[in-house]
Image (cartoon, rainbow, N blue to C red; front, side, top):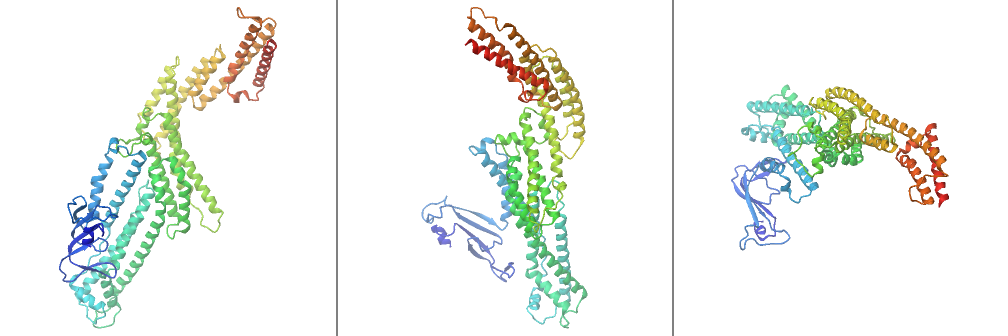
Length: 636
């Protein structure tokens, strides 16, 4: 093996150990050769377990191109170093304490030409690996260890278990009973402790659910392997034989021993069942892993795209999973998915500008939702669509749930979605109600900010009044995205009452501007300006009524133009030095422009209304327009 490695045709890595040889027991445990002496072991690392320290050699040359590194200088072709049996611990320290802080602290220029999408993907995968490594190590350390029985009894135990008619000393029996009861207590504590760990935080997502079952599976696997070890089997077999034997060479039957071994069998069954449950749950929950990443690092729009596939996977789990398909667990899974969607929405609301600019990581990320008040960092015309996308996600989520539920109802023999919609969607609905209020708040702020930018005459007192109420609400230091507290809701109601007062004043200001209508086109221009600025319903309805007033004034102007035409058609007023034909056509076109200009600016829905007065004005417009066109045609 070593010679092949040197010549470049063997394995690309070699490990050299100096340790006592060992054998593997029936249940996979490591057993050192009794009385063995240390010896050098050369291995490729696949089958030999390191028990202490060793040295590794890794060839960096291309495996497809054999290269004899024994000839000449090849310092860069082989790397080497020391390795210990605690490699996972060392790797965890390097990844989480060295590389992770380094990656998180990288500035934009450090990423050089790396595309934003690739940067986000790398950071996401790296973080996931670092977390899984840390959790796996933590789970390994937390796995219970069943103490070995006293080595001085090992030979006697082996002899008894091999069928020898040997009397078990009382001190050995007492020791075995004691350690056996300690094992039972430890395992029961571990099982009950694993159930207690299920009391997760209120905003836990599906990743926490998967991590819980993975950790539980690791712990139970560790316990199960120890139960099968020679250490446990020796003690159990001797105690079982002692409790069942009537042979005088053995200790007398003991009721306590019988109860302890019966309890142990129950524990073994319980561990086996719990391990099967954990394995089965991990198997099915892992089908959701491909959806967890977009739920955590995507945005509301990308989450909407995965909803059909996500719901199909959940339906599959509910239909065929052996242990996880109870209503309680499935409802809990849905709730965790809802929690993750809300968490994702909050993150995207605070970071959508950074994400759009290709920034990622915690560096520079907002620490509080107070930043949403800053209209320079978060322009309302960009923030409001982001907020609306969260509401749209909730609607799409509910729609896809109902669609899947309906499909299952068409298969009466299959398992149905009999979950509580309030439990699943209640938190998201509550969050969306808060989002709707924030949309209203920032739309109102944007409305008055736009009014300020138009520099309208006499508008300053109104703007100062609004700014006073906005500043008061802002100084309450509400956590805008914390939908679980209702203090903001109470203050927002008061804010709306105050804004209604300001809007009444603004309404009076608008009425004043339309009291004396001298020019229809100028009035329409002003009205369009107000309509583009004002979006609150009570103001919009007032503006729509102004169109009706203007249209009535426009009708009077049409009547006036009709009277002018009838009076002057035989002798139209002429522009100086124009011939009769050109002067007559110019006069008729001027009259037509006076009626057509305003008509083109009125909203189409107003013109199409079926009210008698408005229809009369439209007919008058059509009549005089046709008359003026005919007049021009006669002069051509």
